[in-house]
Length: 90
Image (tube, rainbow, N blue to C red; front, side, top):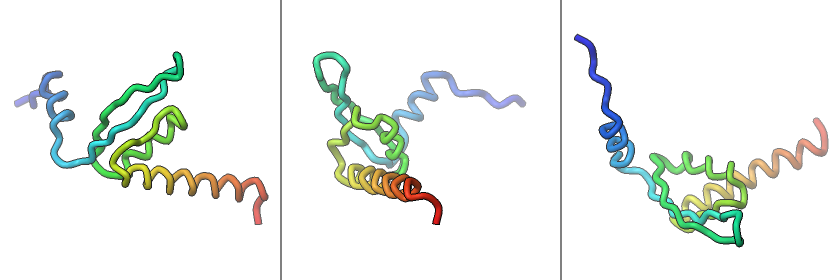
């Protein structure tokens, strides 16, 4: 018996309706006229939101505050790493 693959509608529903997780509201800077767009994102666990750092200052987390704290901690860690690297190996 061959397993049945989910249809695109079923797959989308599984992603959109996954249980638990964290709902994140962000403000995205648009290139034109220094405008912003609100977006709502869903992550399974807090650490997944770190991928927002790839967008640099183009995305600002508005809520929840725990996600903003996670991103600040990650950014501080990376900053420390590269400041240390500039001093050279010890």
